[in-house]
Image (cartoon, rainbow, N blue to C red; front, side, top):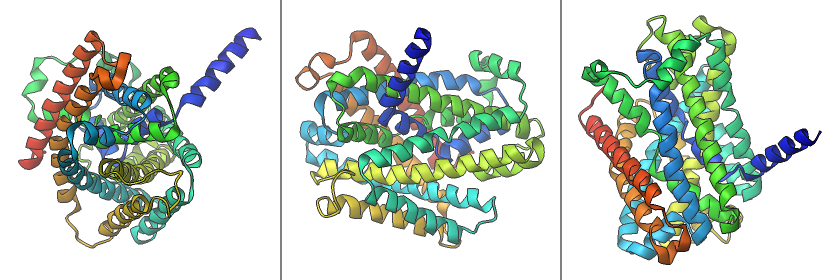
Length: 418
């Protein structure tokens, strides 16, 4: 009985601290991330599963620094950048971030349209309806109610774990490939290198850092709850990458095994899975894609509105009324409406716009990571909560690797690599 009470109290504590870190990490598995993992499984089977371990470590390191800055300073990341480095730099960063995030918002509504078309629902119905639902949730709700919905949406990613199990993979091969780094021979395959870069490069994006820190500040988490916030980040990072592992496994066991290597959209993977793994796997994969796209369509415009308002000194926050934070809510509404509207335009070159936004993402990410490392190491800002020597070594190494990957992705995007 005592053991049960101990475990129950630990579980209750875990659920109590889940919030910004768990939500932010899970939104990273949006329609673009699901497409990348599906392509990895379809094209190379289990051979890219080894990337999941470094992905998880990189995500924990970067997100932990953001969470720590939020709880210690009580300020959002764009707020700190404006105060420490000036308005001019912040303004140009905001412009880049808005362009990048707008491309991502369009990608999410494209994911909503594709997933619902699998259930024979026209995009002219699903996209406007979902845009309105998302808008109403954020504008009419307060932070606590919105966070509960986001946490619920995060748990729906379990659908991909079930889809992976139902696909009947080769578990031994999957586990071996997860812990074994490939030999030299595979690196001569340019597409394998590009796919490796794509998987790792989709892990850390600029919007994630801004959203995580802003939501920690709005939730009112202070330095006394730092350990809980760190646990939130770690649990979120591990959970989201377990989901990514199962997406790759599901596509490896079905699409790769049956020679179906060409996945242009995330919805293609779900559609192709239907005759191979059965109706239930198809429904779980398609429902997971819809949830991921809808979830990210909520978060990305919200993250952008937070970041711009903090950077330019406007009032922001879900606990503020429309009257008190007009710019915040109108800007959020505009991003949402335009992102949904573009997807409905016939023959719009959506893929080119999304690729262009990813190139800009590659330009912006190194700048954000360097600013973060400079801020988190300032004793006058962080007090005794600056990085330790070893953490700095890991953090800078992670940053350099992510920057190199971003440059490669940006180069491939500009030169049309496939």
